[in-house]
Length: 228
Ligand SMILES: *Cc1c(COP(=O)(O)O)cnc(C)c1O
Image 1 (cartoon, rainbow, N blue to C red):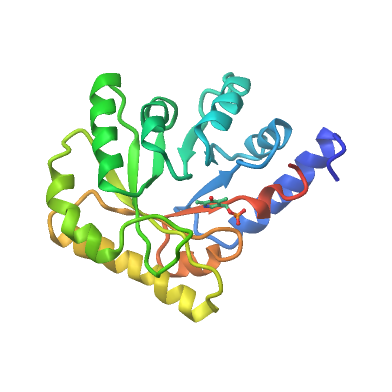
Image 2: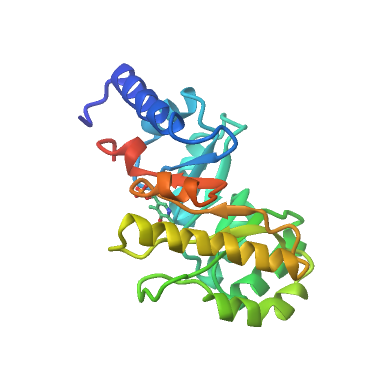
């Protein structure tokens, strides 16, 4: 399948995208997670209308962004965990960062935004169930950090992001996703009116996430599998 036949890639990827779009309302933003895929496959998705692409490593993104520099209307999303020493590059390279997962990173970003004069849309990553492999604030930790976050005047925080722990059934997944929406409501009621976006749902669970109120889904393998 990874033999390079651009026409075949174009058809297959356009077809997969259509199947996904058929299942989600038009106002839900479909972010194509390109972290494991090729430039040819990204171009195929672009030609099928995708403008939002996500990467999980700053360095990989840099290579792809330079190869695709002619496609100036791509919006690049950072979804991977971010070491503090990569924060500056991430601010410089991405239009959105979904993975602001701790106060110290938020503070770094605040500084770099003012240095660089560039302010991406930021999502706070929340961990809604215990999962040693995932980072993010718990609900109570995030509430406790709000006064400190509020001091970071350069941050353009527009929503929340979560990654589901493995092994949940459909109704458990729905419940966890719903809690992200409830948390956003709670934050708005505390004055964080810009927290409107809910980035949740991947290939395996985006339909459930959309039912639970996702405004952004992050889909990789269901678009790109076979083209890595
Ligand atoms: C890789 C990744 C995705 C996409 O996962 P798929 O299961 O391939 O759709 C979405 N979100 C994050 C944070 C990821 O790291």
